[in-house]
Structure formats: C-alpha cells, structure tokens
Amino acid sequence: MSKVLNVMVNKLVESLNNFADPRLLDPLVLLTAVMSFQRPYIVLVDDDEDFLELMEYFLLGKYPLFEFIKFNCPLDAQKFIFKHREEIAFIISDYHMKRTNGIRFFQNIKSIGISIPFLIVSSDTSQKVQQEAEKIGVTDYVLKSLDIYEMFNTIESYVRTVQVF
Image (cartoon, rainbow, N blue to C red; front, side):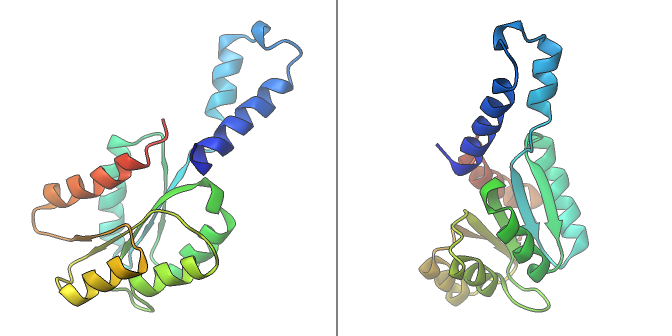
C-alpha cells in the first residue's frame, strides 16, 4: 500500500474509532468525515507562474482528488516536501530555474532520505541532461513542447501511475 493511501486509511480508521458504533453513522456524517481528510499532494515546481497555472488547470480537471501545491522557488518547495513527505504522491519540476535546476533539486530531496516519484519537465533537449536525470533516479524527463496536449498526456501517464483512488 502506498504511503499516501496508508496515511488516509489510518485517518479514516482513527475517525471511525471515535464513534461508539460505526454502523450507526449517519451517511452525511460519514461523508463529512471522509471529505475532511487531507487529499494527497502533487507538488508542482516551476519559476514560470503561467506554466504552473497551466499545469494545475490541466491536471486538476483530470485528478480532482489530488491537491496541487505550486511553488516558483525550489527552496520553498523543498521545505514543504520535507514537512509533508508522507502526504505527497508525486513531484513535477521544471529543469531550468533561477536558483538551481531540476536535477540539483531532486538530489537535495533525495539526500535527506525522501523518495517520491519525481518528473522533470523541460524545454532542454540535451541528451546529456536527460541521461544525467535518468542516472540519478529521476522517474522521467518530459520535454515541454509546442504540442501542449502531447506534453500533458505524457505527464498524465505518470500521474496515473500514482493514482491512489
């Protein structure tokens, strides 16, 4: 069972244990309890605010049960990831950013013992960068392309692999 799903199941069991007899639960009370759980996060990191909005818009339409957390600064994202590592299902990061790049960002996360599926999205077509990403364990490297539907369908195929519902 994935860590994210395990956390959600434990929260549901804990919530149900607070009731004397779960069979007596009103369906509305149960629905309210389930809806109050924290949805798993997909973290989006890109210094281009417009691209962040576009990614969130596309993915949210297909995966409303995830909560998308956007960062334009990898350092802020890293702090969030460290604090919420158990609730994160997936990370999607740009390669070229102002203070770092996606590979260094991934290495920083990995160096503190965090293992979360990580996808780099970039317009950099360099084979060297793609090979380096693969070598250090990045889940995949997707090219930003002019065919936005093709690019998002590729991203979606990876998000689908971590779908916990």
